[in-house]
Image (cartoon, rainbow, N blue to C red; front, side, top):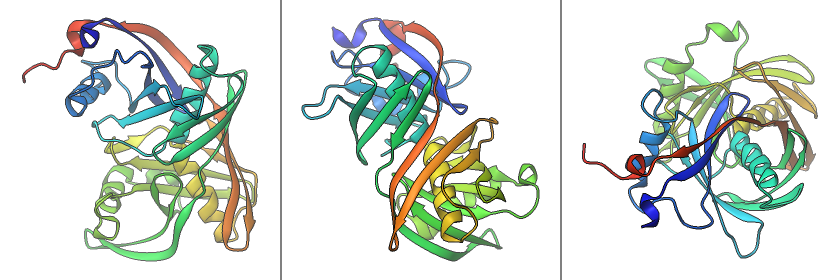
Length: 282
């Protein structure tokens, strides 16, 4: 049966945000039980270990369609770092050329590959809300909110970013009633100058700080621009120390032509054993 075949995969990362990428155009990945299987595959130590899993599938109108799962098995609409990785994967496996378009739950995404650098055109951001005051565990958090394919609450930090309790404060913001039922990612940023900022992100679905977040980098740049603190292009330094570049233009109150550019890395290629892919009783 298809669901018990050995299955090739690539382990990739973009800015320290790591993913399992699988060509599923033939339908070999198990069709059911993703809520259990994906966390097993993404679990570090006993699985491959990753922040998310990406399935590449056929699409009648685009070069391909992706199905993106967070490490807890939940579905995410969009992921900037994952998008760069899957674009490089599609190019290297000849699913698409250097210029491509693929379908996500947030809409179609255009990508351009140049060696190991990938630039993606982000879906139009929406839902900008500024200066929200949240009561989080008896503390006041002041956040700005924007959806850049997935929701992000951004906190500007004046002091040392490395001293921020991202796990604790991020979890409180992620679960706050203001953002229910979907929840939100939480980004803590420090603006260095007009074209540079640093970021740390607590990601919903991973339920922990990740080493980088592409949609978070875009959210940070746009919120900082709205505050008059940065102008395009903006270099965003991730927790992993990688540098992403965000480009954008603003027409009236709307941000248009939003692009994210950065590297994508192949860590290794492997084969998932059929026995591991079978859903097992706990």
